[in-house]
Image (cartoon, rainbow, N blue to C red):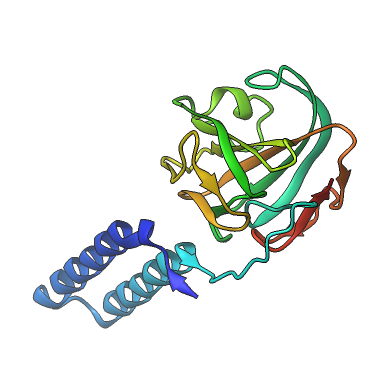
Length: 217
C-alpha cells in the first residue's frame, strides 16, 4: 500500500489546517473539551485523506481473454444500451459506482493501443443519475487489443468529484491493470463491451480494480 501522488496537495492542505486550528486553540487557551474536539477532528481529517488516496500495489498478469474491473466499487448497471459517442451501436454497459471510501485509482481493463480519447467538461450530477454518463464531466477512452477488439471505458465525475485525472492519450500503448487515471471524491466508471461478451459479475457485486474479472471474450 502506498499514498497516491494525486493526494499530496490535499494532504498538505489538511495538515496545514490541522496545525492552524490547533495552534489557535493553544494560543487562546481553549477549554480542555474544545481541545479534545479539535484533536479528534484533526485525526478524522487526516485519516480520511490518507484512506481516500491509498493506492494498493497490484501485480497483474495480462490476459487477453478477460476484461478486468477498472475501479473499486459496486456494480450498479449491467444492460444492453446504445453507445453514441464512438461505436454508435449496441453494446453491453457495466457501471461501477465508487463511494468516497473506495480506492479511486482507475486501471486499464485490457491491454492494447488507445484508439480514441476525449475529455468532456460538464455537470456534476450524482453519479447514479441516468444522465450523468452523458452530461457530467467525464473522459472517454477506447483501447483496441491485438485481436482488434475495442473496449470503451469512461470516467464520470459525481456530485462530490470535482477533478478527473488521466494518464493516457491516443496512440499510447497501455497494459491491463496499470493505472490510466484517478477521480477525486466519489464517482463512477462505465465500461462498454461488444455484444456476446460473457459478463462475469452481477448487479450489487462489490468489485476490486485490477483484480475482479468483469467479463470474458
